[in-house]
Every structure is written in structure tokens, then in C-alpha cells.
Image (tube, rainbow, N blue to C red; front, side, top):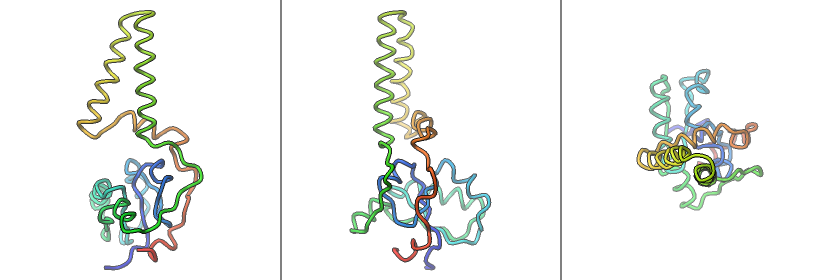
Length: 171
């Protein structure tokens, strides 16, 4: 197997900032197709995520775009760290997306309940909507709140944090 020239981490910025392979580029799965439009289709890419699931989805997306040399890091960052390999962390690390979702969802429930008691019972529909959204996210593994929170400035890559020059030498 040819060593990859480029290491693409498809996790969200908060996950990447909290620990990534040195030399990897953070390109979240949601932005991958648009970012990959100008890449060379014959370039060897190694795709990384937490466990391998999103990296496999990224491989499928890039295959559909005509990329030929794609590899998924088996087991993802979890396997990488389990094998004692190092991770790099960014100084600017936002809270995890899960933590942000709990804070926002809890705040929405509290505010809508207070509004329901003070102003109108119709605010209970908003409370129910938050609950339904959380149940849907748990069942489907698709979280609209996470999609919205990921667009906030502190959850975005400010600049390319690492360079891919030495990524292949670590593998």
C-alpha cells in the first residue's frame, strides 16, 4: 500500500481541536464534497474520524466524485490512541459538541417552561419540540442542533492548524 500523501480528518472542529494526528487537515464531513472539488483525483488520501464510521462515509462520497486512492484509518482516532500513538491538541479548543448540545437543549427547555408558566401554555409546544428533536437525534444519529452549532464561529477552523508534510511519516 502506498503511503498517503494527505491525511484528512473528517470530524467536527471541536473533536479535531481536542486531539488529532499531527499533519492532518480538518475538513468536516459536511463540507467535504464542496472542499474536494479542486483536489487531484489521483492523490492518495487517508481518511480519519473517531471510530471509522464517518471516514467510511467520506470514502463513499469521494469515490462518487472520482477519487481513486482512498484509505480509511481502521478504528479511527480511537484505535490510534489505543495503540499508544500521539495526538496533537490545539490551544483553542471549544467545548465538545455533545456538551454544547446539552447546554443549549437544557436552556431551551428551561426558558420555554418559564415562558409557558408566565405567559402562555403554547410555549410548551417549543419544549416538546426540543424533546422530540433530542429523541430523533438519538434514534437516527442525525442532530440538527449539532449542525447549527457547528456553524458558529468558535466551532469552525480559524486557519489550517497543521500541515500535511509529515503526516505520512507517522503512519
